[in-house]
Amino acid sequence: MIKNQKQLGATKAQIVAFKKALEQPEERPDQVDPILWQARFDDIADQLSQMEAEVREYEALANEQEAVIEINSLADLPAALIKARIAAHLTQKQLGQKIHKAEQQVQRWEAEGYQSASFNNIQLIAEALEIQFAEKPQLTINKKSH
Image (cartoon, rainbow, N blue to C red; front, side):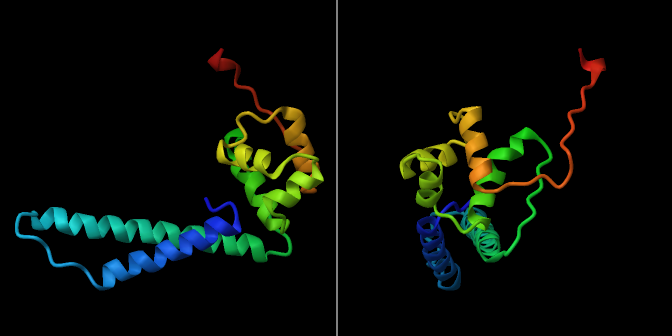
């Protein structure tokens, strides 16, 4: 997932390089198996497709006036917080300023999927991003698994 403008620029540059590699392939060395050589290009094409999808997602979030971000489990929360920041048109630095934390702290939290962020800090982030729930959240407990 692209998390900031710097990563967006780097990803776009990588896309250009990958497209060039696919459009102007090197000649296969005789000692390289043709199947392995083709697999290399298939892998580049797959990576290119993934990077293009990430750029589209980032740009769509950055251009939205209002975003709806689905969360199906707590495991989705870290990515949802990053997407919400992007959709709120805030940089990591600006979010840090809103919650009185250094930009580097926000970068760390996002890089590690908010694993070390306290619940209180996650609440501060949600409030700073003005996150609202479409419905009242509910917890469902399956007693059969106990």
